[in-house]
Length: 51
Image (cartoon, rainbow, N blue to C red; front, side):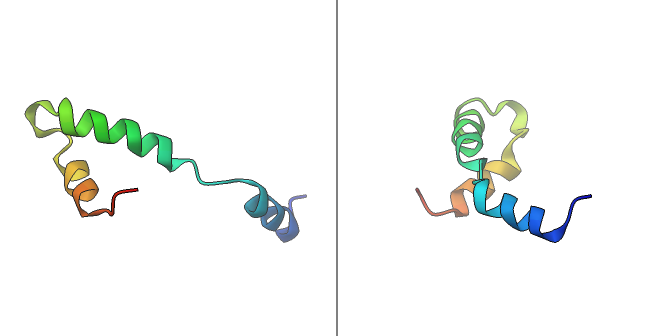
């Protein structure tokens, strides 16, 4: 059985992985946005602080 301590151990070991995804998504949204398909993402990215 999975217990709370298993989740806590996983939280200590696993790191967020959205950074690389946002890098790729930013490139697609900013330079290949045909028909406004990524307008919501572009708006979100513009509000975020540069990293």
